Image 1: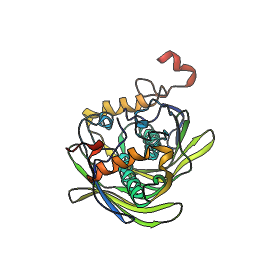
Image 2: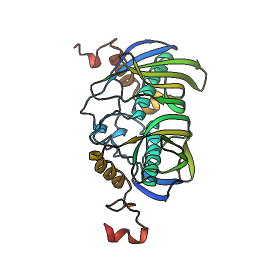
Image 3: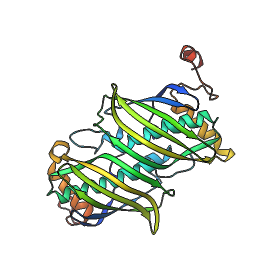
Image 4: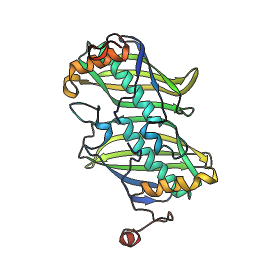
Length: 155
Length: 164
């Protein structure tokens, strides 16, 4: 399993908000154990998808220099199960950005039904060069947003 | 990726607390792409590991009557990164258990240093249909890492070798 929990970034505005999507499919590895004969997407992986989207928005907002790692979370509510076949739409809104990190809120929905809400999340900056190749990260970001084709291939 | 995030239960007090360990190895699948140059354990999986030991403690304390499903999480802090080679010691303390739900607080440590803490984690207790009970129970026994025998009874360290 590659730990990429976001398929697309549908819309974003630097320093303000981002909307992304994740399609949940029956062939995901984690559904085998979560739970036997009752496949639902684990809540924490929804949190990971939210933090990945927020991290990409940090990446775009800070001129492709830093990404974000979670340093705190608060007031998360899981309202309903997310099942295979659902398309999870994630919305992240930045509330404040400072020199250490960002504070944001987020929710995840399937169509119009809200599944998960988080009213305060906190990301700390981490230097992109320390964790990833900068060009690879940029290319992947543009692939997610659909702005440029991946690896120069036009599909 | 198996979604069992406890390797072994090392301490258990019915209705009070459970302590489990999780060894973090570079062979874990989630280290692919998280990240390319520096493998760091994804923070939400630490929450999941704590939630699993908490759910395990509740299930064993209530004799597998319910399955505990996460409903709310509040006040989570991550203090430092978890890297391959670390051994996470996960401690879940039960604040309350009732018919409707349960509340725990959790703390994850590496070498005695706190890496993450959860202020409050609330579970809903779901009744398990009879035909699924056997699978749920099997899962808890599997995740106990030998702490429970095949019938789901506690095994004391001295007798562990005989039952396996």
